[in-house]
Every structure is written in C-alpha cells, then in structure tokens.
Length: 81
Image (cartoon, rainbow, N blue to C red; front, top):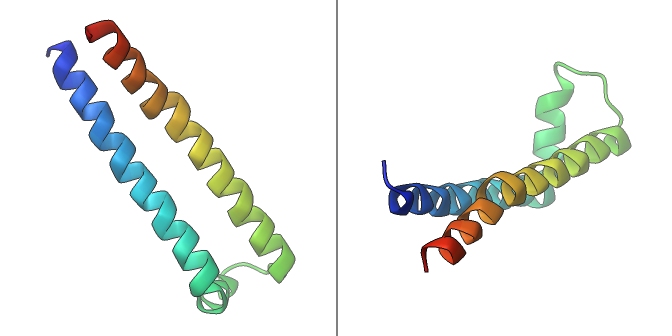
C-alpha cells in the first residue's frame, strides 16, 4: 500500500464521516421529537439529558474525525508534495 493510497483513503473516510455527522445533526435537529420518542422506549431519559448526550456524542465524533482522519490526511498532503 502506497502513501498515496493511504492519503486517498483518509480523504474518503473524512468525507464519509463528515456526512454521518451532518446526518446525525439533521436527525437531532429536524426529527428531534421522533428520535427522542424512539429512544425513550428503551431508556428513561429527560429531554435535557437526551440533548446533552447527543451534543457530547457529536462533539466527540467531530474531534475524532479531526484527529484520526483530517490531520493525518493533511500531514500526508504536506509530506507528499
């Protein structure tokens, strides 16, 4: 596997993960009540706790995307240029 293949893979992983993050944000903002009702069947959560969990999860996911996908991608772009 070449460095160019790894760079391309990291680029596509970044795009896919950002798409998932945007989908998650869309689901929580537009479909909030439906998602809350769906999850409240299994878990006893207040709306505030539900929002807090999802906000923290999205923040963690975004940080993970930057650390594990975007930063290594740009490092390879710099090294290979």
